[in-house]
Length: 206
Ligand SMILES: [Zn+2]
Image (cartoon, rainbow, N blue to C red; front, side, top):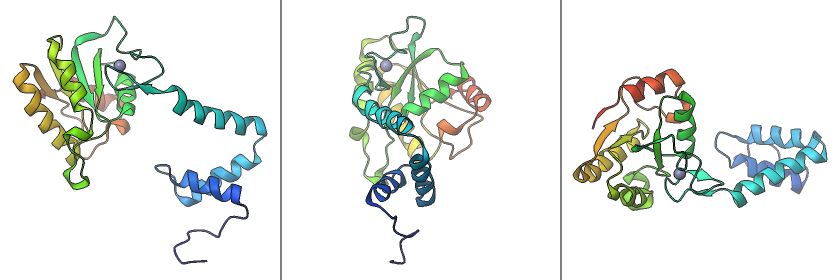
């Protein structure tokens, strides 16, 4: 056993393969991967099959909304096709799970746009690598009056917000940024409802 191996080599290929697959997921270390794998081994076949089918249908049935780039089974997604939503506001987020966090507050009635990332020169991610082109195309028809920048409050999120405000302001659209309540370094999906609601209400012109 080499020094790098965090735990002894598993007893079978099937177990080892699954442990390896789980280890690749965010937030799951080798120990957790092993624990999940052995728990699945103890579950009945029906449970294992249900998990496998849920994983497969995730990739087969989920696509990106052609309007807002959110993940969806329907195109346009349920938010974009909801006539109750305020189409004059578009809230820009980095990841689809940020929409879940904002929707959970119940404080926002406008539409969204998912960038699927943030500008990060350090990691070689430029403006063309995330869904900014789709956003700008969407803003051309004059319907949108306000763009709310809800990118994360870390370096990449701030850089992305700066870039977006530069390219959106000339279109004559008001650009605001989520404000007080969100400390620097916060990832939106982990913020609580009260903090997020305050940040939405306290958004400032950017
Ligand atoms: Zn949509």
